[in-house]
Amino acid sequence: MRNDISDLLTFISQDDLWFGRLQEVVAEHLTPALEEFDLDYDDLPEMLGEPWPGVLWGCGFEDFLSRQYEDGNIVDLYLKRRGWNEPTANREYFVALRDTPVSLYEVSEVKPGTSMMLKDLLGDTKPVTVLEGSATQSLKQWDRIAVRVIAENDAHVISGALLAFSREAVAFLFDALSTVLNVDKNDELSLPTDQLLKCAPIFTSAWLFTALPRALSEEFPEFTNADGEDIMFHDLRFPFETDVRQKDVSVCLNQVNGFAADGARCWTWIAPHGGKVSRESDGLVLDSKTDGRTVLGHLELKGKSLLINVNSSARADRVRNVVMKAAGQHLKQPLTTIRTVEQMMAEEQDELDLEDADEIPPETARQIVQEHMDQHYRETLDAPIPALGGKSPYQAVRSKAGRAKVVDWLKTLENNSAKHRNDAIEEYDFGWMWAELGLQEYRK
Image (cartoon, rainbow, N blue to C red; front, top):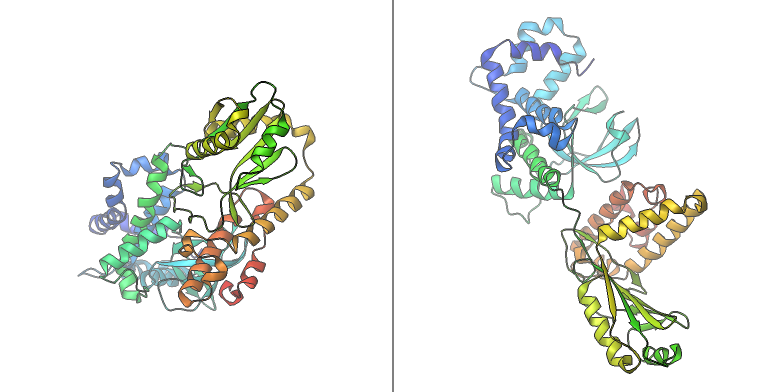
């Protein structure tokens, strides 16, 4: 087999000098992060799970094969002494590993079990089609991976050590490379082979420095709304004063600017046009829009009460003041129930468990989800996006710098969707968005 390294490993382990050098190189890859988080290599299986400890060791091993020492290179030495015992394919593979640097690649055109297209994000090589059976089963469109791409006859293959990079890991890597190479962080990085060969440990560190904090944190993800406020669901119930009718309260609520009637007894509280741009958040943003405007809450008259639902303490205070100012003579002070995201999700799961008998047919559910996504993303094209500097996608594509940001934004949307556990979301076709924004050529 091409990647049968067992005899090479045996050769290295039997030589104290070369085995010591291998351990030193592996330590270069792992020690900075392990020391930062006060961990040992033996902690990695529990922290990261399989197969990551082995993959990380493999990153160091492949780097070691490329190292040149005063007395030579381990691949050259092995082939000189034992090469006669290796198949031609193995010998060629070892030489290729010696000469091929790790780089960061963007994944596209994934054909599970067969192949994928890889674009080098740090070099000036053209995108290549890579024949690969295993990794293509899990990789998705626009994923970023650190790996060695090896030319083999008329095709290309990848090495055994592959790390999938999150957006945070990519940013960490680019910052680290810019710092080490003394390059302005705003400049585009393009590294020749000799520089990439020297930077291999930085790739592993970037992955570890972003993967370990997630593994160490047992906290529930942070959720915020479009205003950057922590999500905390508030249900406010305003009892009516004596002899007050729903009609009395309805007349008052219809006078409030921002309360959009949704039937005779319901209103949607929406933000004004030209409201503040959503703040960046390190967590997950829960946001709902209608006609390009953020939905702040929902109101409903039910029996002898006015019920209001909002998703933050700040919005609860605001809507309480607005409602009491508009209809305070008809209402008593509200009773408030507060629920966290975890509590809300637990309640929804309990409800789903009771609704199994009434489950929506898969094709109907798929159509509903995709129609909702169509509507949501059509509204999004006109909405200000934090990642685009507060501009809408339609506005941002008018400049060269803006187009680059929109392309990256679209790739992120498509990549996140492809990883979703809901089939309808995973299979959603974003092609119309690229076409609508005139960016089809960047999707290749």
